[in-house]
Image (cartoon, rainbow, N blue to C red):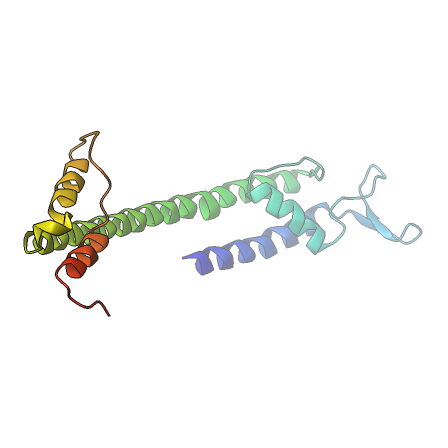
Length: 173
């Protein structure tokens, strides 16, 4: 999606910069060695790459105002460039953002399910663990933490399982 967005922006840049250069370049002044407008001022669209800068600024709706068209053809090209910029940039970015949000929620859900499975495993292991290790009481305080009990502690399920294994004299690898 990002590659397609980049390609569409690049194609639009080339098309609109070329159109703007041709519409606003004026006439070549051999004495000044630059393009000048009808009023004698140098044109800000002196080359296609320079017109590309204007096109980027216009399509992204930044609009510095440093380069402005003065001809009717330039106004029309600028208007179409603004609308194309909205369609090419604004709409796909909202879709990309929505896809990112969906993937992020899915990742969070998987992480929550993984933690829940670890808690269930810890509860199962603690039930078989000797009481002398204190794992059962720590587990019950930890399970209460999920219910909002202020005196409950945050219990890491894997630590509980390791403590249980140590208390049962099982060698951990």
